[in-house]
Image (cartoon, rainbow, N blue to C red; front, side):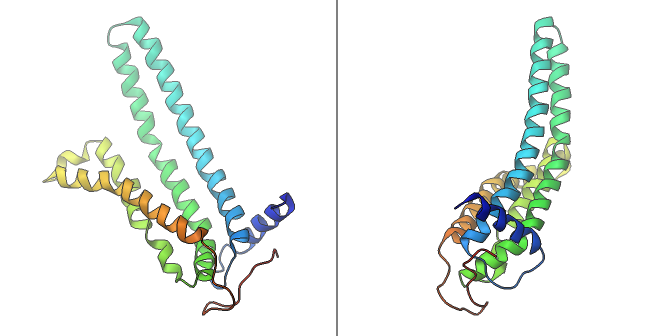
Length: 189
């Protein structure tokens, strides 16, 4: 795929953010989705890594001084890491919103309902919203924290498995010819 085709596919995806009808080929879907993923997740990850690296350096410096300084530096770093859940949740929601219509059109190209794209969502929401509660001690207020912690622990791997399954569906060849969602969009716009 040439660079001009990639740019055309990204522009097409951006122009069709709210169009949930029709079909999109793999050549239209993947450049846009990878661009969204790259911009949203890479920036969020870079922010998280910068905060963690800064904290690790502070912990190292504090450990050289001895005493309780390392413990205090660790607690401060952990508090900053907890604050990352807000930008992470926002970036995850942004990615879901930006990709919702494109995933729907891609599933339509396979002959599947766009509702299949929602399968990973409950796991991602549970993992994103539930984990900060585990960090700040909210788990202690639950009657049986073992069950909730187990559910939170499983939400991440189950969500990842659901995303991988959805990715496989999105990567497979579309149905040839027309289907109930329209005719195939194979060419660049």
